[in-house]
Length: 220
Image (cartoon, rainbow, N blue to C red; front, top):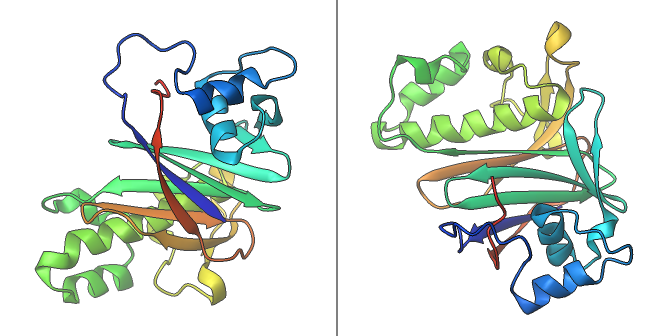
């Protein structure tokens, strides 16, 4: 599995940049054999994967959520304050979660966690507690996004401390909000003030993170 951490250097651009200006980025768009400009995100993915934007497809899963694919690769996108993350895996569905570590914890911050998780966090040094809970939260959110529509109200029922082999996390059935199942979750390396996790529908090799600079803004 590969994860691209994309820094949007031109995030303050107000022109919209209808077409990319970087030579390599423009070449990816111009190589589209049908002449259709499918959008900056599609072109960005094509640029990252070295393929034509025509090969990047938008579909919907069984829950009606928008999905991206490129050939045999399943892709997912998750934005953060400084750019975006794009994960891709061959033969497996993927989901991402990224969250900023808060400067302090209030009562609401503990709600997504079960009794065992709260006890483990309370036993940790106070200086590390916020980062620990944020990392656990991204594991839960990635697993829930992968297995259903979200079902984030059921996050406390998802145990991320007792993960099985290869990061297997069991997600309970959540009625109309999700089907439940097993997600294989990995933490991603990030800056100290951020936590991120990726979930896959089946065991995959270790996630390789690539940090790249986006030549144009990707848009809202």
